[in-house]
Image 1 (cartoon, helix red, strand yellow):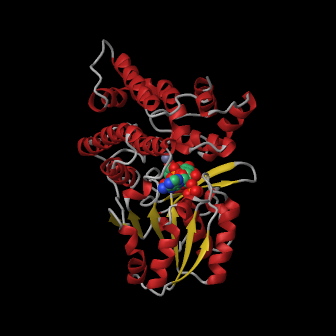
Image 2 (cartoon, protein in one colour; image 1 turned 90 degrees about the vertical axis):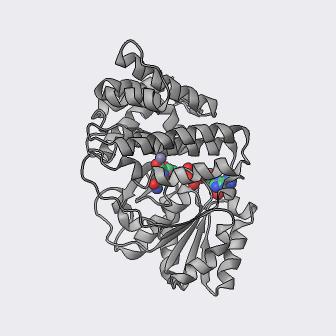
Length: 394
Ligand code: NZQ
Ligand code: ZN
């Protein structure tokens, strides 16, 4: 097992009606003025926003609101949020929503506390030195942003979707009531389950390290989410399934499933999806499912042991004549699961039609964002990424 630092400082309030405690929780930290940040409509429709504002009022906590975060959250709204938070002198950003809202809140948090253009951090030009505290009320189990160190923002100027990772942005607290996710459309629930599985899979494909415990946690997490995703596809109101998936989402991306590995994970599939999301505005989880199989087939020979272990220990595949055949059966099993829950396994099933030029552009930007290469299972360069996009483009 390789050395590692595990840092998961977020205080979690999990379970039914936990959002009712938001006023007391914010007060207990001594905050005075909150920027309540949210998406376009779901928190208004569900009544959650009104409830949150009244709980803050009951506890005499001043607040200002900024809604309008869209999936693949935009830099322009981040700039607005920074301006508002500075003008109103807020001391906490409360993100009420899914990963996009949380990521936008983190970016505002960087922008308020650091000089210069916040986009520099997403371009890797500088590192943030502070972040305003971020609290979360989660409405979508997917990204794990409620405990993660990362934030992903899309700059409309150039269709650039980039991430910034820093422990400074790990949320102070996360309120997680699985009931709040029951209003999600089926497609969005499946996207979330896919993203959760993928955060553990990205950390699975490394080389080396004896990680029996980490592998066992990862394996249980993937199996649990697959099983619960199937339940939710038929019974979206199942509280227990919602709860399992929500907790798995946090554990899948708070680094627990990567402890002891020889790198922080592969992340090539995420890098490739971010380019599709930046250019075509697709849902993140669906984008991941659309390219994972092509990536897996392309890199399998370079990390065969891990593919065989995934197939046999996680997906229940019997060993075939050769390791390669076993690995391929595992990839097929994962893809048929994606189809079972309504996810795509190729680019056309995302409902988009990139041109050859688009594929070239995405491959170039993906590698540029990775500083010249991408991946750990197999190190990928621009021609490799282009090839994977071409394989997925059917
Ligand atoms: O805007 P509203 O009306 O709220 O609608 C949202 C949005 O349209 C809706 N929604 C959220 N909660 C709902 C609901 N609809 C009904 N009922 C509810 N309870 O769902 C739609 C998608 O929301 P979004 O926040 O975009 O989804 P998700 O949580 O999947 O976040 C995706 C973003 O996070 C990034 C992705 O790249 C993408 O930009 N990621 C962030 C990560 C991180 N910070 O650690 C890691 C991930 O790998 C990922 O890259
Ligand atoms: Zn993800």
